Image 1 (tube, rainbow, N blue to C red):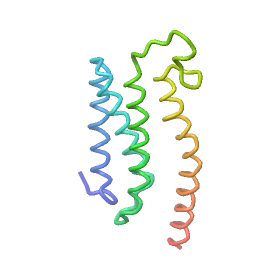
Image 2 (tube, rainbow, N blue to C red):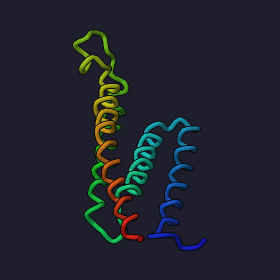
Image 3 (cartoon, rainbow, N blue to C red):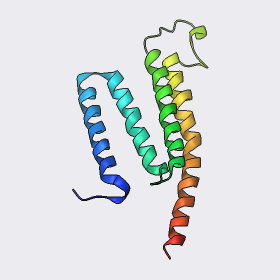
Image 4 (tube, rainbow, N blue to C red):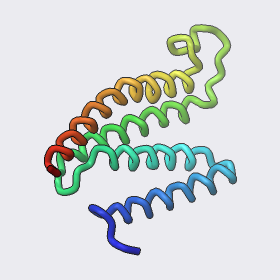
Length: 132
């Protein structure tokens, strides 16, 4: 295997291992392992988009994405067996586990996708100008 740009081969190998863990845990019903492997997979993909080789500051955005996803997934898994009998048992109208998913993962992701696009678009424009 040839050496890729900034260790991209190692990242691809890591993603492959994570996908194997996702496959095995999904087929065996190990949903806790599957959930955190999925969070790790998404965190690595976020890292690919945010991290610039040799720049330690860009790790912060990927780390924050990973921690946010991990906390949201923890809320989902911790609250998965909560029994809802009345509306007082809900969180903003949702089962507590679903509320963790919606308010802890989906909504923050929707707000940060726009920011990520702006940052990456700006980086792509800069790289296009530097190549001329």
